[in-house]
Amino acid sequence: MSISSESVTSAGLLEAARLCPQLRCFQAPDLRQIDNTLLRMMPLCANIEHIRFTTCLYLTDAGIHAVAKNAKGLRSIQIRYSPNITNACLVSLAEHQHRTLEIFVVVESFFFPLHRVIEVNKQTFNIEAVTKFRETCTKLRVFEWERSMDFLDRCPAEDIIPHVETADRVTVLTLGQVDDVVLRTIAQHCTQLKVLNLYDVCDSIKSCSDAMFLKVVEECRNLTALIIVDSIQRERLQSMLTAYPRVAMEADE
Image (cartoon, rainbow, N blue to C red; front, side, top):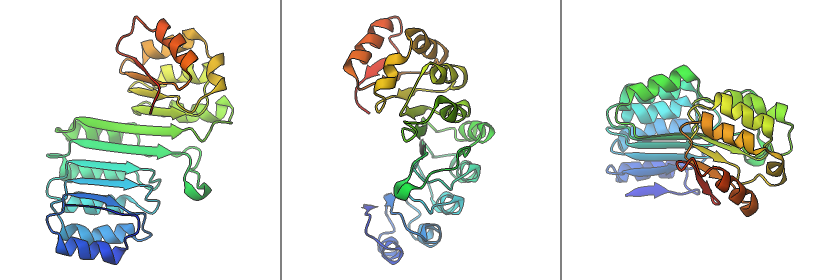
């Protein structure tokens, strides 16, 4: 059985957990008291294996710790657009779920509903915490850390670059604007990048040189996909990258 609803309350979740101790999948709603709800709920349904948080703006490390400490065998956790988590959640998951955790996904964005914007220099995790987490969780087969900057589509390159420079463990990078300077920075710093998502980039991609795209592909050796919606630009790059079959040119996110 699974629970997924945007209209449930804390009381409703607790009652569901009490009645469904064999609950396996859970998608958390955006509750103001989400941490406290998880603290009370998780001991009642410790068999949860898959949990997803999407735009849970009030979720903190305390809520993740409640999951990590009480779940008997967590297999996957996804945390999307929850700006208040830190390295502490990685530490807790690694301590309590390192024997079973297979999938970890986090998506951080610089834009949230109600015009809530993350501080310019905020980064969810640091390199040391990510490295230790991946080493400790020996069953981990999917580690996806996406940094989404499509909201910064009208910002100059100097406002985007600081977020790229700290993205050396990020696996998916989503941009709303790009130029040669940004591409050069990606090539220099994004060593673990697997997907470069330029789906929302329109005119600015035309000014980017072939040489800079080639540099990104050469330096980002884990890169497997470039997402570009403009068919002309996609075909242009595809013909240039024939020597790199590992990189797929995609039109959809």
